[in-house]
Image (cartoon, rainbow, N blue to C red):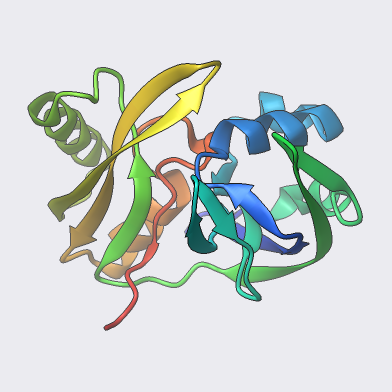
Length: 197
């Protein structure tokens, strides 16, 4: 067993709206407050959820959270984010008090956005994802969802939403801990149990 399991550190967020495309802005704001986040290799970030209200904006809801996935031994510096404000291109959010949550295995996992190098071509994207799964020793059926774009330094990056099926408990936790693709500190490749209909 892994000695230092990863957990989710979940902060409440208050504010009105955030841009739908906020991964890079969130990464930049947090890195200014916590330089160690910029350097971290083993931390993932979840995009903030909200209700789409048009004009590329999400309205924050009671279930809108700022979530880091990180080793349980590394929580302390991140807790200092509580009480800070983040300005996401003019949309200011207040970071509240965090709670921790253990990762739970599930046979189906979902990620809102996964990106890889040269990911704009679906066939190459799938080849790369299957290569990563194979490298991890994970057996899973992959289903791509919507093609999505997000912005880094005014450059558009292409990715897809993704669902994984038929995972063992061990593989499910492995995927949640390691993620798939790149840009994990910008909200990409963050997998959670697929919501049951």
